[in-house]
Length: 264
Image (cartoon, rainbow, N blue to C red; front, side, top):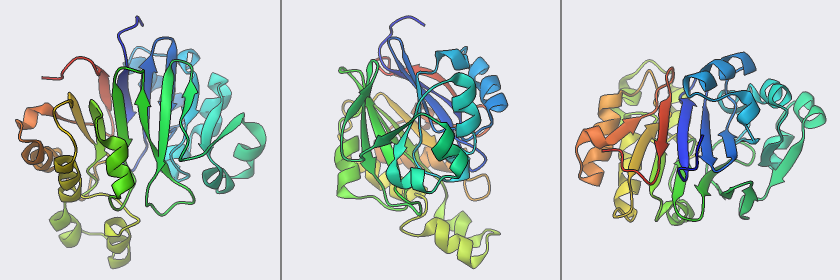
């Protein structure tokens, strides 16, 4: 792989499955395991990676699109799994009894190999959800998906990151006028649901921008959003050309990006 500093790639992002890779030195972390082991292997190959290169799996929360493949992937790749005690308590017995589980305190930094991991709690309708900032000591990558609202702690965690992967789940108008039931609309748009384009744009405006080299819109709804709307909202907030904003696709994910190198 070569030591090119902190880098990340995304295997897929959306309601049908989520997984990403974060690398530094000899360490490759897989964030979430929302695909079966077979599908994960296929998606890893697209990024020129294999399961044998995975050092550990981190789980953000227990919803199926983030953890349905954790047992099959952890067993096949023979790697430990990191998650909060709340997420573990919401898992089925085959997770709790058969895997090498390491518990995360969402307020404590820890390291896995060459990567420092800073978890932080987020408001979402799960047992003990968290998101993460990853660092190699020189650059920082912030991941934020599956949260219904922004807290001052979230802002503090993401401030100063050189790369950001930010949830743009829905456009408010598309969700309001779309086909979801009233109860599902309330859940998605609620304070424990998912971030809309405008809310994520407001967050981006409040973050220190001079150091940011990569912005990726993630976890887009295939029903209630479009890549063009997400790009436009974040580009306006960041005062940049929409081409600077990348979108993590459900099917093809996102190729590896070296954080020390600007995207455009």
